[in-house]
Length: 199
Image (cartoon, rainbow, N blue to C red; front, side, top):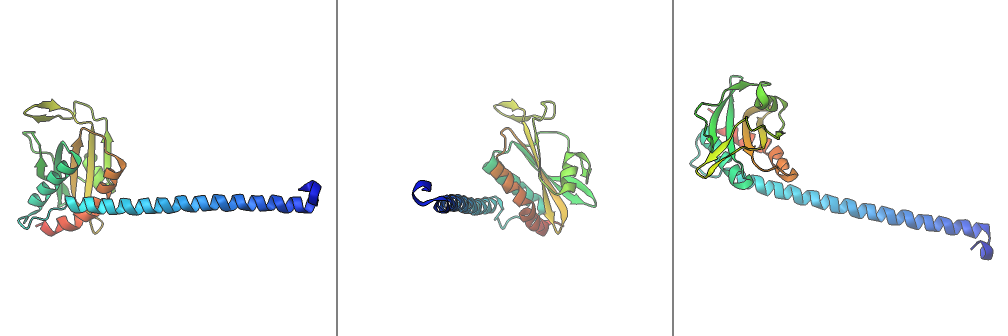
């Protein structure tokens, strides 16, 4: 280009090539952003569908205890939970009102905001995942044997910026990001429904 047309045409040619490269990069970036947005929308729909599956529909549910028991059962079926408890807040303390596959002879201890891992999750109003639980913590038993879970998840149930209940769940398998996203969304959804059954 320089030999045929001189310096001016060479510069124009270089500018043209640069502009084409910029346009190409911008088009690729927009395409990626569009795919990312579509994926987020699909994920949001999937999470909403999963939440609807977990929510109890039985008209026979008349108390927070029966509501909590149904929630724990649904979570166990959907996410392979090994053991679970639901605590309800009353006068500043959290007391166990529902159990799933709980084999302990002693009633789970009550706690207040900020006390124990459960109390801290209730105070922070965010899910808390604890991995690599030591075997001395607790075990899960069945007629076929016994084993120790490796993961502990706390999910606060929130209504009008207040933690009204807390789910404590033990798992043998690690929880993926989508599952954790579901539980993050559940904090509000379950809170709104749970409060209807509180005395």
